[in-house]
Length: 227
Image 1 (spheres, rainbow, N blue to C red):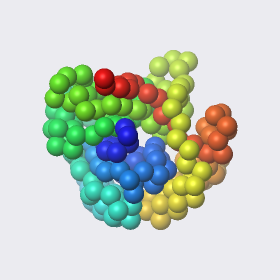
Image 2 (tube, rainbow, N blue to C red):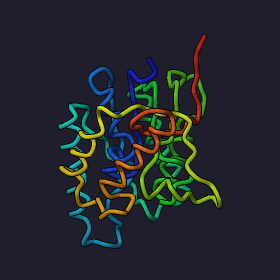
Image 3 (spheres, rainbow, N blue to C red):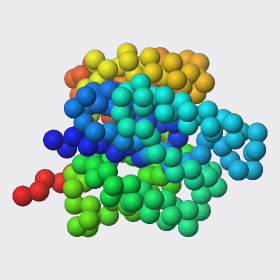
C-alpha cells in the first residue's frame, strides 16, 4: 500500500493539520508517518518572535504525541528570506531525511501557493524527489491544499486543481478538535477560510465534488506502479 510510509513536508506547525490532518488520522494506526517542518516560525530580524518559534515547535511535538506518530523534524530555515542557495540547501536536507525514512508517499505544499515559504518548501521537495535509483521506493508525490494559501495561487488565473481525494468524514471532527486544542491562535473568525466553519465548508465542498460527505483534496504530481 502506497500509504504504509508517509512523509509530510510542510513549512510550519499547523500546516500539517490544515493540509492533511484528516489523512494522518485516517492512516496513523496502519502507517508510519513522519513530519518535517522546513522553516522557523519567526524571522531573524524580528527578535521578539523567537519565543513564538519555540512555542510552535513545542505545540507541533504535542500534536505528534497526541497522534501517536514520530516526533517531528525541524529544519529551521528562515522562511520569508529564503534565497536560491537556501532552497538548494533545503533540498539536500530533505533528501537526507528521505533516505533515512524511505517513504512510499510524500505530501508537500503546492508549488504555486501564495506563501513564499510554501513555494520554497515545495520546490525543495521536487528537487529532492527527482527520479533516481536511490529514491525509487517513492511511489506517490502529492500537493496538499492549505486554506488561505492555496485558494489564490501565485500564477495568474490558476486555482488549486485537485485530482486525488481522501474521505475524512469519520476524521473531520477530530481534525477540528486538534486545531482548536493546539493551533487555536492560528484560526480566524468566520467567514475567513481559516475559520473552523471555513475549514469544514472546504472539506464538505471537496467531498461533495466526488460524492463524499467530506474529503481532503490533493494534486498528484507523480504516481508509480513498479513491474
